Image 1 (cartoon, rainbow, N blue to C red):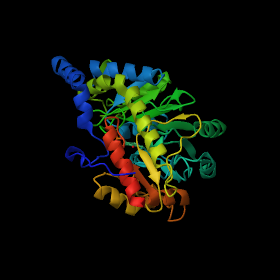
Image 2 (image 1 turned 135 degrees about the horizontal axis):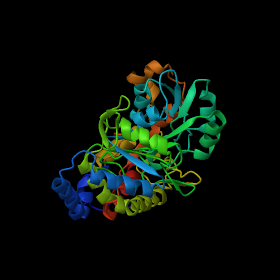
Image 3 (image 1 turned 90 degrees about the vertical axis):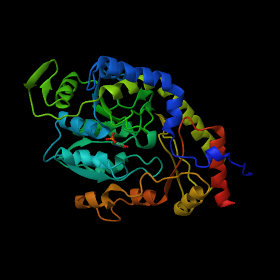
Image 4 (image 1 turned 120 degrees about the horizontal axis):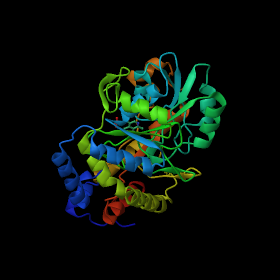
Length: 379
Ligand SMILES: Cc1ncc(COP(=O)(O)O)c(C=O)c1O
């Protein structure tokens, strides 16, 4: 393959380009933000309510509760599900820190579990080995936009009466057996951090559930324990974890585009997979059975990761690692007691993975450039 000269404006192919997306939907987003100014409803309010209704509908669940971040979504979901002091919660060692942090924040003990070496999501067989009398919940992470093995996990949860709290922070629009992420466990937790497939213009999160009682409690917990519609009636000790009006407005404006954006991500992934497929030294992402993957990240794997990353950066391609360390080998979570070598698949995967740029607004030229830069490293 020959290297095409890259026009100056593309000299860096970044991991994401939120400005390019804003240019495409500027009218809709600006209009939605102006509406918030008009209504002066900056915290919760009509724009958040509208988004909650639309996103619940999108996820095919009875409720979406808009909150201030994906991390708060996890904390509140665990609390509302009754997880706390003395409980153990099983979660994968390969994830963003917030998954494990949230379990600690509610006073429970995270039990870190190894992952499936092909799909990088939590391995139900390994979960079985982590079970104890104290296990109360499992938090599968739908990592990189790929839903975890919910069949295997649901069997375990049913056998042991465990709560399944989906960490769907990276999986807006992903599906499992045609059912949306966020509708597969007792409760689903989303991050709408700006770089997510559906991203706000600041921090925001959402909790999805079909459970009316849980939803009611979540609406209280996010707002200082106050009963909705009955201000200053503190039913329990809560949090300030409400979604902002501006974020609700931006998310409502963006939601109708999500499926198209996810399809574009999938078609870029297909190009990478096809056009890099002959490079035997690289393992391409593998879509698990029953999963509609939405490629929040396109993560390849190669023993030559660090050299490849340097070559790509030299060629103007931003390539980053999600994530360089499994949770048990980071200073914050070493205290959990899993030493080096205890979760070998996660450890090996973290040494070899590399995320290539992938976002819906990438031009075909930019995709060519990335593919070409990878080939040039090996030829
Ligand atoms: C898997 C996962 N869980 C939780 C979070 C936390 O979300 P937030 O940054 O919105 O608090 C993130 C955010 O990146 C994430 O990727």
